[in-house]
Structures are given as structure tokens and as C-alpha cells.
Image (tube, rainbow, N blue to C red):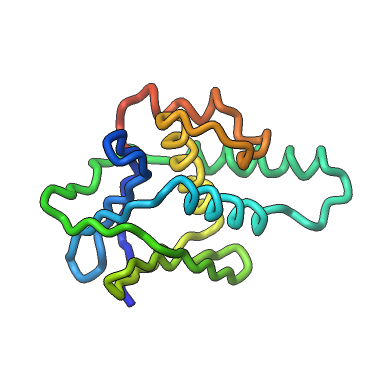
Length: 166
């Protein structure tokens, strides 16, 4: 299995898909395309796993998640995007999610028997979700999957900057 060492998330208007331009640890660059349906399911599954079960007060739980998301966004560092010119493009058919405490692994699979894993810690998973949320805004994919602690005004900061965030 290959590991994704760096990823740039964009929205392709022509394809109406979210695209992940990935640098693979083998040195290969590949573009993974995700449909809206698959993105919705993936985001819902991650958000469900992030839900803090220890809190009996839903308001407190939302406040904790909003704070964690805000802290993760504050640590985002603008970088040059992954260059995917001429890269293989694959439509992702499934994503397996593995979780070990605060660590996630997203295993993207495509029909050419390919797979690549994106490993995320607690901060990176929230950063990645924030970037995917920005792609949803850019795509005008209005969806009820995003919890209220994903404040659109904060999520839109990356859109206004015009720079890729990783």
C-alpha cells in the first residue's frame, strides 16, 4: 500500500468532483477524484467518529469541537500546491476509514486495484475537513452533513486568500 505524503484538495467544476492531487511516498503523483455522494459519506463518517461521546451537554460538545477546529485552522500553513500536470487520474470507488484513538487512516481505493492511504492525526483531520468544507463552498454543494460548529465565515478564509492550504 502506498502512503500519501502531501495532498492538495480542489474542486473541479468541469468534473463536478472534489479532486485530491496527491504526492505518493513512491514519488508518484496521482489525482484522486471523489464524487459528491462519496464525499458526503466520507465526511459524515469522519464527523461521527470525531463526536465527543463523554459530554452530556450537547452545547459543551459543540463548543469543544468548534474550539478544536479553530485551533487546527490556526495551524494551517500556506504551501505550494501539489503539481499534478500529467498525473494519472483515478475515480475513487471506496474509502476505508481506520481509527486508532485520535489517529485516522483514510484508505482510498480505485477500480484499477489501486489504493493509497492518507494518515491524519487529530489536528490534521480537522484541517483536512476544513479544506474539504472550503471545496464544498466553492462547489456550491449545499449539504446538511456539516455541523453548525463549522462556521462558514471562518471556513471561507482559505477561499478568500486564493492560496492552497495543506
